[in-house]
Structures are given as structure tokens and as C-alpha cells.
Length: 202
Image (cartoon, rainbow, N blue to C red; front, side, top):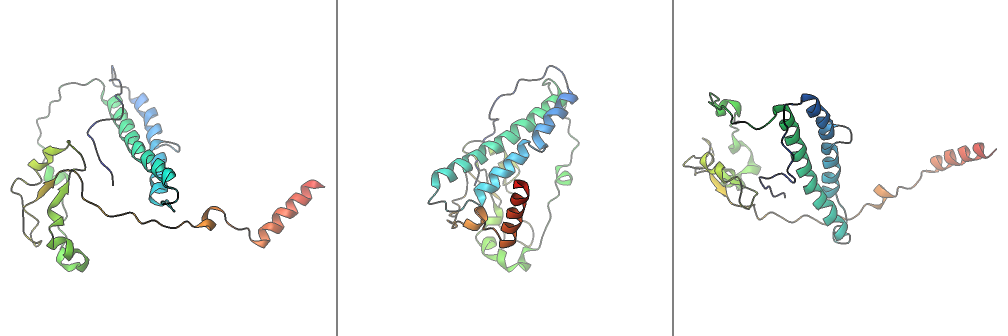
């Protein structure tokens, strides 16, 4: 589970002018072969798939914490790209005209036809939205909640913003799979390696 705070990990300097070339270079740092997205994926799935957590807890804690930091790096670099494209901060002219409900269409799926959903519908999980933050993102209560109700066909009730995060469930301690990290050589591979070494020695 991740917590979110409405700040960047570091404060990048504001650009003095728009610089699309610099933004493109920074974009490579974000999504390139060795960019932040790739690094995030590596640490994130290492932490999700970590085996023998109880035995190797300090190492798991390290990888899990680096994952959270890498999420922040992706956010930081993404903001840097946007800043370089836009240039210095200015008071925006935001007269709107945007119909948010068309920009972000919400699918209305008939959940009554999905048996696995019924437990969560009956307890009201479909109306609950967690902030995943100690203090930030409280403004979403003005559009999620505020007298709004669940979709037609769902068990009735008002939408609710919940401070913080859900209680969550435990992460299971999956046992290690030694063969995944120290695979045995097949006899034919041993023969091939021995043959190559013999040929090189002559």
C-alpha cells in the first residue's frame, strides 16, 4: 500500500523560459531504457515478488522503501518535463468550458451480475474513496460525496471520502524458490560448456 503526499521529493528550479529541447532530454530520463519508469518497475516488482520476507526482512524493507522513493522520482521528473515545456509560472487564464464528465467518462457496469462483488457492495466499499494521505487531497470531497450517491443499480448510499488509508490485509510470506536464483545446469549444457572450454584450451 502506498501513501501519497502532495509535494515533490525535491524542489526543482523554475525554468526562465520554455525549453522543449531540454524537456525532451529530461523525458529520456523518465521513460528511456534506464529511466525512472524502468527503475520503478524493477524495484516495484522485486518488492511485490520478494520471497522469504520473514527471514530476509531487512532486505525486503530496503527494497520496499526504495520502491516508494522511485515513485517519487517518476513524479519529480514528470513535473520537470512539464515545467520545461511550459516555462516560468504565470497566472493561468482558466476560463474553463471543459465538461469534466465528458473528459473523464465513468463506466456504469452492472455489478449485480458479478457474484464476487456482492460482499463489497453490501458493505458499501463501492461508495468509499480513501485519500491515502495524512493531510492532502481533502478537496476531492467536493466532488466525491457532497450528497452524491452511488450509481443506479448499486446498493444505495452517499459517496464518502475516508481520511488516510484502509486497514488493509497482510502480505503473505512466500517461501523462496531456490531454483529461480540458483538453477541447476542440465547435463547437455554442462557438456556444451566443457566442449567449448576444451576447444579453447587447445
